[in-house]
Image: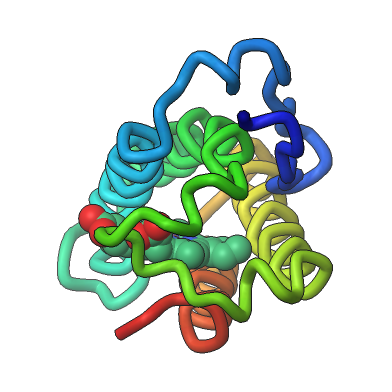
Length: 153
Ligand code: HEC
Protein backbone atom coordinates (compact mmCIF):
# COMPACT_ATOMS: atom_id res chain seq x y z
CA UNK A 1 0.00 0.00 0.00
CA UNK A 2 1.08 3.52 -0.68
CA UNK A 3 -0.31 4.81 2.55
CA UNK A 4 2.77 6.67 3.62
CA UNK A 5 3.23 9.14 0.87
CA UNK A 6 6.17 11.45 1.12
CA UNK A 7 4.97 14.71 -0.21
CA UNK A 8 7.59 17.09 -1.40
CA UNK A 9 6.77 20.72 -1.75
CA UNK A 10 8.62 22.06 -4.73
CA UNK A 11 8.47 25.68 -3.70
CA UNK A 12 5.74 27.40 -1.77
CA UNK A 13 3.47 28.28 -4.67
CA UNK A 14 3.22 24.79 -6.02
CA UNK A 15 0.39 22.61 -4.89
CA UNK A 16 1.08 19.19 -3.48
CA UNK A 17 -0.83 16.13 -4.52
CA UNK A 18 -3.95 14.63 -3.16
CA UNK A 19 -3.14 11.43 -1.30
CA UNK A 20 -6.10 9.51 -2.64
CA UNK A 21 -4.99 10.21 -6.19
CA UNK A 22 -1.40 9.11 -5.53
CA UNK A 23 -2.74 5.72 -4.49
CA UNK A 24 -4.05 5.18 -8.01
CA UNK A 25 -0.54 5.02 -9.45
CA UNK A 26 1.68 1.94 -9.68
CA UNK A 27 5.28 2.45 -8.46
CA UNK A 28 6.75 1.62 -11.90
CA UNK A 29 4.47 4.13 -13.57
CA UNK A 30 5.25 6.73 -10.95
CA UNK A 31 8.95 6.52 -11.76
CA UNK A 32 8.22 6.92 -15.49
CA UNK A 33 5.94 9.82 -14.65
CA UNK A 34 8.65 11.41 -12.49
CA UNK A 35 11.37 10.93 -15.11
CA UNK A 36 9.08 12.34 -17.79
CA UNK A 37 8.48 15.45 -15.72
CA UNK A 38 12.24 15.87 -15.35
CA UNK A 39 12.63 15.44 -19.12
CA UNK A 40 10.12 18.22 -19.74
CA UNK A 41 11.95 20.39 -17.21
CA UNK A 42 15.24 19.57 -18.90
CA UNK A 43 13.95 20.72 -22.30
CA UNK A 44 12.90 24.04 -20.79
CA UNK A 45 16.27 24.28 -19.02
CA UNK A 46 18.08 23.73 -22.33
CA UNK A 47 16.40 26.76 -23.88
CA UNK A 48 16.92 28.86 -20.76
CA UNK A 49 20.58 27.83 -20.53
CA UNK A 50 21.19 28.65 -24.19
CA UNK A 51 19.63 32.06 -23.59
CA UNK A 52 21.85 32.73 -20.59
CA UNK A 53 24.93 31.71 -22.58
CA UNK A 54 23.93 33.84 -25.53
CA UNK A 55 23.70 30.83 -27.86
CA UNK A 56 20.25 31.97 -28.92
CA UNK A 57 18.87 35.47 -29.16
CA UNK A 58 17.34 36.83 -25.98
CA UNK A 59 13.55 36.94 -26.14
CA UNK A 60 11.81 37.95 -22.90
CA UNK A 61 8.60 36.18 -23.90
CA UNK A 62 10.46 32.93 -24.50
CA UNK A 63 12.21 33.10 -21.13
CA UNK A 64 8.92 33.72 -19.37
CA UNK A 65 7.13 30.96 -21.23
CA UNK A 66 9.90 28.42 -20.56
CA UNK A 67 10.03 29.32 -16.88
CA UNK A 68 6.26 29.01 -16.58
CA UNK A 69 6.32 25.65 -18.36
CA UNK A 70 8.88 24.45 -15.86
CA UNK A 71 6.74 25.55 -12.95
CA UNK A 72 3.66 23.91 -14.39
CA UNK A 73 5.26 20.49 -14.56
CA UNK A 74 7.45 20.82 -11.45
CA UNK A 75 4.34 21.15 -9.31
CA UNK A 76 3.45 17.58 -10.26
CA UNK A 77 6.72 16.11 -8.95
CA UNK A 78 5.50 15.90 -5.36
CA UNK A 79 3.02 13.15 -6.03
CA UNK A 80 5.69 10.93 -7.59
CA UNK A 81 7.83 10.72 -4.42
CA UNK A 82 6.00 7.75 -3.02
CA UNK A 83 8.17 5.46 -0.84
CA UNK A 84 7.08 2.39 -2.83
CA UNK A 85 9.02 3.78 -5.81
CA UNK A 86 12.22 3.15 -3.86
CA UNK A 87 12.21 -0.44 -5.06
CA UNK A 88 11.81 0.41 -8.73
CA UNK A 89 14.92 -0.71 -10.62
CA UNK A 90 14.89 2.06 -13.22
CA UNK A 91 14.81 4.83 -10.67
CA UNK A 92 18.02 6.80 -10.27
CA UNK A 93 16.94 8.38 -7.04
CA UNK A 94 19.63 7.54 -4.49
CA UNK A 95 18.79 5.92 -1.14
CA UNK A 96 20.26 9.08 0.39
CA UNK A 97 17.15 10.95 -0.73
CA UNK A 98 14.85 8.56 1.08
CA UNK A 99 17.03 8.55 4.18
CA UNK A 100 17.22 12.34 4.23
CA UNK A 101 13.84 13.58 3.00
CA UNK A 102 14.38 16.89 4.81
CA UNK A 103 17.61 17.55 2.94
CA UNK A 104 16.03 16.42 -0.32
CA UNK A 105 13.05 18.68 0.37
CA UNK A 106 15.40 21.61 1.02
CA UNK A 107 16.94 21.13 -2.43
CA UNK A 108 13.44 21.07 -3.87
CA UNK A 109 12.58 24.28 -2.08
CA UNK A 110 15.80 25.94 -3.25
CA UNK A 111 14.87 25.03 -6.81
CA UNK A 112 11.27 26.20 -6.33
CA UNK A 113 12.49 29.48 -4.85
CA UNK A 114 14.95 30.11 -7.67
CA UNK A 115 12.27 29.35 -10.25
CA UNK A 116 9.81 31.68 -8.54
CA UNK A 117 12.44 34.42 -8.61
CA UNK A 118 13.00 33.85 -12.32
CA UNK A 119 9.27 33.94 -13.04
CA UNK A 120 8.95 37.12 -10.98
CA UNK A 121 11.80 38.86 -12.78
CA UNK A 122 10.31 38.02 -16.19
CA UNK A 123 7.22 39.99 -15.18
CA UNK A 124 9.12 43.11 -14.20
CA UNK A 125 9.17 46.30 -16.23
CA UNK A 126 12.24 46.44 -18.46
CA UNK A 127 13.09 42.74 -18.03
CA UNK A 128 16.24 42.25 -20.08
CA UNK A 129 19.11 39.89 -20.77
CA UNK A 130 21.12 41.28 -17.89
CA UNK A 131 18.38 40.44 -15.43
CA UNK A 132 17.63 37.07 -17.02
CA UNK A 133 21.16 35.66 -16.93
CA UNK A 134 21.79 35.36 -13.19
CA UNK A 135 18.20 34.29 -12.48
CA UNK A 136 18.48 31.47 -15.03
CA UNK A 137 21.88 30.38 -13.75
CA UNK A 138 20.49 30.20 -10.22
CA UNK A 139 17.74 27.82 -11.34
CA UNK A 140 20.18 25.61 -13.25
CA UNK A 141 22.56 25.47 -10.30
CA UNK A 142 19.70 24.33 -8.10
CA UNK A 143 19.10 21.36 -10.42
CA UNK A 144 22.72 20.31 -10.15
CA UNK A 145 22.82 20.81 -6.39
CA UNK A 146 20.11 18.21 -5.94
CA UNK A 147 21.51 15.78 -8.49
CA UNK A 148 24.95 15.89 -6.88
CA UNK A 149 23.55 14.54 -3.63
CA UNK A 150 20.44 12.60 -4.52
CA UNK A 151 20.62 11.26 -8.08
CA UNK A 152 22.78 8.44 -9.40
CA UNK A 153 25.06 9.56 -12.27
C1 HEC B 1 15.07 18.10 -5.33
C2 HEC B 1 15.95 17.39 -6.19
C3 HEC B 1 15.99 17.67 -7.66
C4 HEC B 1 15.94 18.87 -8.32
C5 HEC B 1 15.80 20.27 -7.73
C6 HEC B 1 16.06 18.57 -9.72
N1 HEC B 1 16.18 17.23 -9.90
FE1 HEC B 1 16.41 16.29 -11.67
N2 HEC B 1 16.30 14.48 -10.73
C7 HEC B 1 16.24 14.29 -9.39
C8 HEC B 1 16.14 12.88 -9.08
C9 HEC B 1 16.04 12.25 -7.70
C10 HEC B 1 16.16 12.22 -10.31
C11 HEC B 1 16.06 10.69 -10.53
C12 HEC B 1 14.59 10.30 -10.63
C13 HEC B 1 14.38 8.81 -10.78
O1 HEC B 1 15.04 8.20 -11.67
O2 HEC B 1 13.58 8.25 -10.01
C14 HEC B 1 16.26 13.25 -11.34
C15 HEC B 1 16.30 13.00 -12.68
C16 HEC B 1 16.47 13.96 -13.67
C17 HEC B 1 16.60 13.69 -15.08
C18 HEC B 1 16.63 12.31 -15.74
C19 HEC B 1 15.21 11.85 -16.05
C20 HEC B 1 15.16 10.46 -16.68
O3 HEC B 1 14.66 10.33 -17.80
O4 HEC B 1 15.66 9.50 -16.05
C21 HEC B 1 16.73 14.90 -15.71
C22 HEC B 1 16.90 15.13 -17.20
C23 HEC B 1 16.66 15.93 -14.69
N3 HEC B 1 16.50 15.32 -13.46
C24 HEC B 1 16.72 17.27 -14.93
C25 HEC B 1 16.54 18.26 -13.97
C26 HEC B 1 16.53 19.68 -14.24
C27 HEC B 1 16.73 20.31 -15.62
C28 HEC B 1 16.32 20.31 -13.06
C29 HEC B 1 16.21 21.78 -12.77
C30 HEC B 1 15.49 22.61 -13.69
C31 HEC B 1 16.22 19.28 -12.04
N4 HEC B 1 16.36 18.05 -12.63
C32 HEC B 1 16.03 19.53 -10.70
C33 HEC B 1 16.26 15.27 -8.43
C34 HEC B 1 16.17 16.64 -8.68
